[in-house]
Length: 250
Image (cartoon, rainbow, N blue to C red):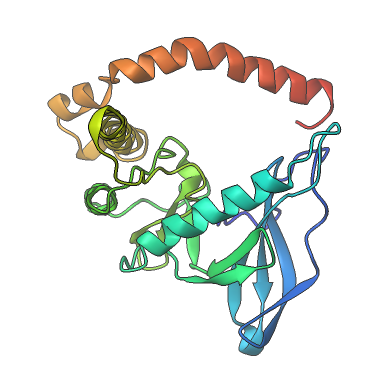
């Protein structure tokens, strides 16, 4: 997950218990080493097992908030993300799913490297070509990644290859027919278009020297539905950030 050793942890935790000190999977015990990310929905940590083997555990919170029971939400989000990992287990650029842990957690293999936010070295010339190819293979599995706008979801492996993590909000709709099926296919195509737009945008941010003027211009052509999302979503995002600052969680 995120490679920053100090983790990405808010000043004040609004929901969720501290991560478990250890867990058992496949007859082996893994002990907590580092908290990587702690937010309202889940906590993600690195654990060490036999022979120093590193694994990543993501535990969705099931605790209530302000009196609202949210155990069902934690289980549902864990089920969804596990399903997405299982759909992509034939891809070497996606971590191996190791198994479920309890009601709302799962473990996957550890990938050495840095995410784009923490990457200090110059990215390989073919990195974004390989990332785009990876995204297109994900699409061929009937899925949209959806979260490509976050650089910390893209890892740069120790061998320079791109690796995708965090399929929390990815979308792989079940087959349907009639108007519902047509709507799902249309939405999936839109989300997939957004994935490719964000790959071009990341390339412009990190390796603009590899882009022709035409490619740079195209990387700025935001799909209409993303413009609509920005119009509606940006004020809501700013409101959320102000709330988090007010309660001391940022």
